[in-house]
Structures are given as structure tokens and as C-alpha cells.
Image (cartoon, rainbow, N blue to C red; front, side, top):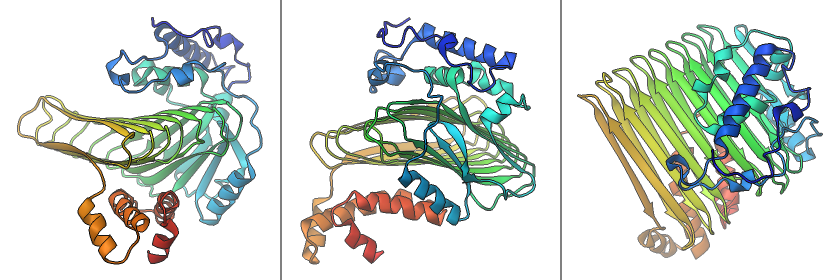
Amino acid sequence: MHVQPLSWQNIELSLVPDALAGHDAPWVLAARQAAFKRFAEHGFPTKREEEWKYTDVSLISKRGTLAPDNIPPDASSSAKLLAWALSGEGMHLMVFVNGHFDSELSTIDDLPDGVQLSSLADMLDSDAALPELLFDQQHEHTIFAALNNAFVTDGAVLNIAPDTVLETPIYLLLIASGHGVAIYPRIIVMAGENSSATVIEHYMGTLDAHNFTNVITQINLGAGAKIEHCKLIQEGPAASHIAGVHAEQSKDSIFTSRSFVFGGRLVRNDITSSLNEAGCLCTFDGLYLLDDKQHVDHHTRIDHIAPYCTSREYYRGVLDGESRGVFNGKVIVHHGANKTDAHQTNHNLLLSKQAEIDTKPQLEIFADDVKCTHGATVGQLSEDGLFYLRSRGLDADTARSVLIYGFANDIINRIKIPYLRTRIEHLLLDRLPQGEMIKELL
């Protein structure tokens, strides 16, 4: 057991208010207690652990409490405006405030036949059928997942019947509006055979508060299912966000993960997919835009279990100020996974001398007859490119902005949802000098 600060050690599950969802269900209480015991025995990860070597989470361990916020406050006016705007876009919108479902801001009444979207808390309280195995230790990819198992307050459960195609995206807006709250959502997606859907998770923090979000997303794809999962992090400048996105793929399924990080003081995303049967396709895309003292860590892992599967991974980062990025991408080709086709890249642009990136793409191959490549780059803005743009009449700031935009746009252009693509494009341009001018040119 690691030595831990005293600030959280007095927390016991019994101190958490009884109002936590599912407290009357014996299996839920047992799962919470067992998970908290695992977390207490391990403690917070330290930099002595290889998987946390570059990321210091002491900022979280020094919090006064890890207990979940249990009294949802009103969403801020800006968050409400965003929710109303999303409703106007025709999204199937589910809003959570400090981890609690807000039915008044949500619009999920017009879901098509074959699609069920429910509050996890409502399901736990009503003893509705849930895959209890999803709360088992075997699905805890990091020790923070155990903490989420212990304290999960609410979340979304999406069930898609076989052969059902959901044309309109499911938009999950998770708002952190309290001061220093701990938030534990859980997102569960169960996609039946040959079903198809897009799910967007958008985390928005509007206050400069030391909020802590610990979220787990679990996605199960049946044979031939197609799920696109997009995650946008716009947490507040002092917030910590620790997350896991974990997919299990069946035969001929297609899973796409898109991760965009624009906010948060400390962000850690663990994204994994297990290609369990033949013919799977998995794509991971990511873009992080950092400045000040932001720290963002992406740990990805793709397990090629079965033969004839394909994976692609494209991550790009732009780092300014004293920010630090970490990319650790692992592709494992297991015994028997012949005819695997895997490709992985991570490119980074450093805009200041103080910015830092640790990038480590990895391939572990235990099968024959495979095609696997990977690569990473770290560099600055091209002097030749700046000179060319200046020679065409652009001032220095605009020339730099055009090059940064071009670098990041390689990932943005891969977004298929127009609303999300435009939003992320504008978030990028709002951070660049002369960004308004570039908007007018698009």
C-alpha cells in the first residue's frame, strides 16, 4: 500500500450519504464496498508506477474529500444556454449537472424504436436489469475505475437493439458547476448486432474551481455494430479529469474513438479497445491543445486478439506555455492474431521552450504475418512555412495561426458530425491570434 496524505484516509463508504443510487440493492452495495476496499488498499497511483511515471495525481490526493457531491446545484446560465442550443440542433440530449441527471434540460423523448436511453441512477434505484459484470474488478483498467465503482452517482445507459440505426447523435452534456465537487459519472453503451450510433460526451466546467471528475465509459459492440464515440473536454482551468473509455468488439464491428482536450488543469484519458473476433476495425483519433500549466495524459491500448482485424490511431498535440503532454499508445498483437493491420502515429507541435511532451508509441507483436507500423514526431513551427506566408503578405501572428490551424485540422477534418466539427474548429481558432480572421476565410 502506498503512503497517502491523511486528507482522504478517513473517508469510508459508510460516510457517503445513503442517497447514493442503488443503496437498497444488495449487489450494488457489495460492489461499492468491494471497490472502495480495493482503492483503499492500493491508494492513489504514484510516479513510481510505470503507467503513471509522467503524471502526478497528488493534486487529487490532497483534496479535502473524495465523497461525491450529492446535492445537484442549478446549472450555470451559460450551460443552460448551451443545452438549449443543442436541443435546437435536434440532438438527443441528456444533461448532467455535477454528475446528476437533469431531466428539465434534457430532450430524450423522441428516441426511435429499438433505442433505450436511461439514467443509471434511476435504473439502480428501480432495480432494473443491468449487466452487473460491468462493475466487477476485471473491468477496472486503473485504480481510479475502482473509485468510480465505489462512488458512481449517475450516468447514461444506452441500449440499441439489433439492426437499429440511430441517425441523430446521442449528446451527453456533463456540466461541473459546483465549487470543488467530486463527480463520478458512468456511461454504458450496449450496441446490438448490426446497430449503429454516434455518442458525444461533452464535459464543461465554467468555474475556476478544483472540481474532480472521475468517469468511466464502457462500450460493448455486437457483431457488425458500428459506434462512433466523441469526447470533448472543456473543464475549468483548475479542474482534474480522470477517465477511462473501454470498448469490447465482436466480429466485423467498427469502433471509432475521437478525443479532444481543450480544458482542465490535469487530464488523464485511458482509452482501450479489445478486438475479440475477426474482421474488427478500430480507429483512435485525438487532438489536445494545451497552454499555461496544463497537464494532459493519453494512455491508449488496442488489443488485437483475433485475426484479420485493423486498427488506426492518429493523435496530434499543440503545446504552449509551461504545459506538458503525455502520449503512451500501445498496440498488442496477441498469438493467433494473424493478418493484423495496425498503424499508429503521434505528432506534436511545441510553441514554447517550456512546453514538454513525452511520447511513447509501442508495438508488441506475438503473431506472424502482420503489418504494423508506428511513429512519433516533436517539432516547432516550420520556419520555411512562416517565411512563405509572410512573403504572401500575412503578419507574423496570422502566419503562425495559419500553420497551427493547418496542423490541427488534420484531426478536425476527420469529424463527420458538422456541429461538432464546427464547434471544435472554433475552440481552436478562439485560442489563436487572428483566429477571427481565419474564421472569415473558411
